[in-house]
Image (cartoon, rainbow, N blue to C red; front, side, top):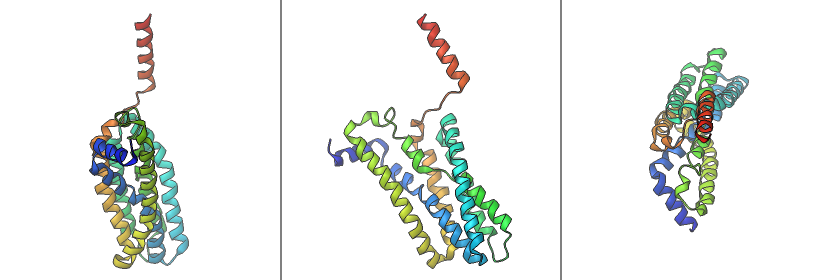
Amino acid sequence: MSAIAAYRALLRIVGPAYILVAFLGRIPLAISQLGVLVLVSETTGRYGVGGAAAGILAISNAIGSPIFGTLSDRIGQRPVVLVQSLVGAAGLAGIVAVTDPDASKGAIFVMAALAGFAMPQVGPLARVRWRPSRVTRKISAASSMPRSAYEGAADEASFVLGPATIGVLAIVAEPSGALLAAAVLLAVFGSSFAIHPTSALVGHVPSSAARAAIRCGRASSSS
């Protein structure tokens, strides 16, 4: 299978809409950290506060991502990512709402922590949906390279477009416009990614008790 045919096969499996929402759903994370830095620094006139808020958002995301990733494995991506997208979007909008020249540092930091903690890592979540045991078992092995190339290109492109978007929107609509745009993108495309039919391809991981019961059942049936 040629590379072009492999890409076509991928599109036939998941559909163009999935490619769109899975890509645009990554953009808010790429915008958020630099967007917070620019907004808070320019609005308050304190670069230290802006840097601290951006750092808090990044650290909170690093803490929340494995927690929500594990939860997604347990109960499925759809409910988890949907809640993350809506709460994360509210958090980004909340940062804009509480940031003004006389803003309390505590309020800014709390909203940054909330937004970062809730924001979904759409890239890794999207890659899970390509697992060979699920989608790609329908495609020949030749498509594995285009699939990996697509995911790598999507991640890189999102982190190139994110800062560029901030620069454009900061000129056109002030720094707050960039974070509000990220909030809208997250609410719309993060939620669309969450409820896309491919979310059903990600199986639930049974609990330890359930796995033990399954093993015991298999042992009994084999004896």
